[in-house]
Image 1 (cartoon, rainbow, N blue to C red):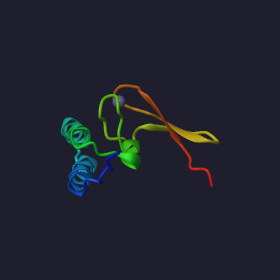
Image 2 (tube, helix red, strand yellow; image 1 turned 90 degrees about the vertical axis):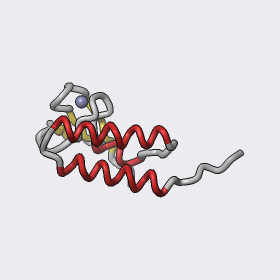
Image 3 (cartoon, rainbow, N blue to C red; image 1 turned 120 degrees about the horizontal axis):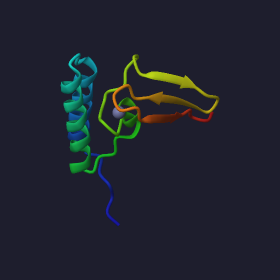
Image 4 (cartoon, rainbow, N blue to C red; image 1 turned 60 degrees about the vertical axis):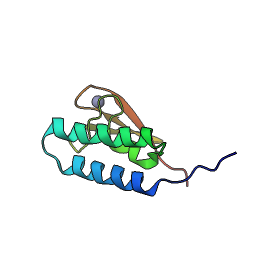
Length: 94
Ligand SMILES: [Zn+2]
């Protein structure tokens, strides 16, 4: 079996694009950055891991404070303000 190499450059590009999305006030541009980051991940077979929690996988909206967050004992439910998609973020068990 071949080992999966961590593509450092791809990860750097993804982090950079996501940081741009975070700073971007223009919703469409932010979405464009997120979409690009996801595309880089797919193309290079890079796992996004924790980064997946930062955006809506349905419409690539970068989740921010405006998105509704509901806290449950085991997870946080975030509702995307753009498409209404609900995202569950499970808390890590200690
Ligand atoms: Zn969405």
